[in-house]
Image 1: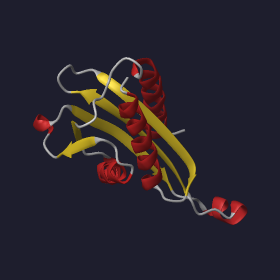
Image 2 (image 1 turned 45 degrees about the vertical axis):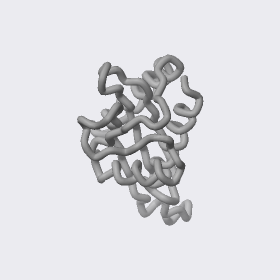
Image 3 (image 1 turned 30 degrees about the vertical axis):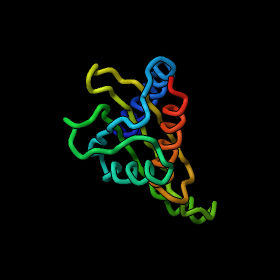
Image 4 (image 1 turned 180 degrees about the vertical axis):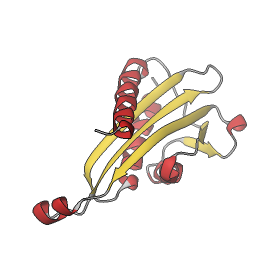
Length: 143
């Protein structure tokens, strides 16, 4: 396993543990202003689109100083190799993403989520929509 993959795996595990520990305690109110930090492969665009598609009840702002919360994260894509295409008949990529929502006033990470799609038909769109779906659930529960 190369260093980049190991680093991403560690971050995904930490985000999942952090999210479980903090999920019940910190609310993200509906209508909150959220700034999505630029991420590798322009993943922030996929997140913004997924938030709209899944109707996540937040307002996305383009300036961090106008936001209540900030979303940071990382993503990694791995295209199907020749062996996967030939032997499994699958051209789908493997996608991983991890996001963290931080309250900008307190500096606390209030929610985190990681997703791994090993046979993703829609690439980054799939992981972004999973993140959006779970964030929407978090906000609607109000916990």
